[in-house]
Length: 133
Image 1 (cartoon, rainbow, N blue to C red):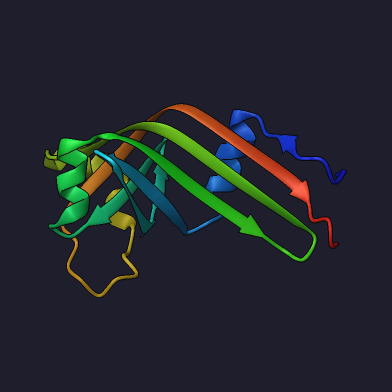
Image 2: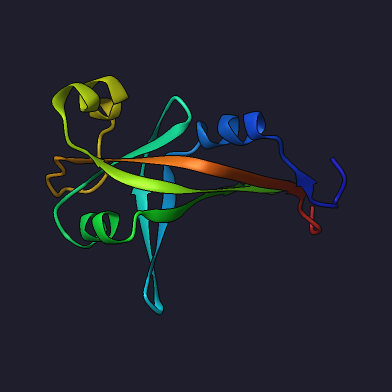
């Protein structure tokens, strides 16, 4: 891998997403941008996370167009994947069960019985060798 950033294809982006447990969901709320770290899982070609009642769920309902970012770095290389799409609260038991989100254990001690799916319409990723490596 050269030092120049490598644009990643969609399949590679999804493979990298599957390796990491934490991502950031980004909402635009008027002039404000809200960013929340979440642990997540992948269901098909969508992102799934759990949420307690509060700001995230309110934003999903009011501003469902989101970005989701995951990154990783080592001593030698780094990558970042961003997807853009629509977040929706899963509301039906069969939908929740079939999504696979019930297997996701939240890192937070708060009870999280709300389930959100982000369905992307665009995925982009970059990987590069660190200049100091």
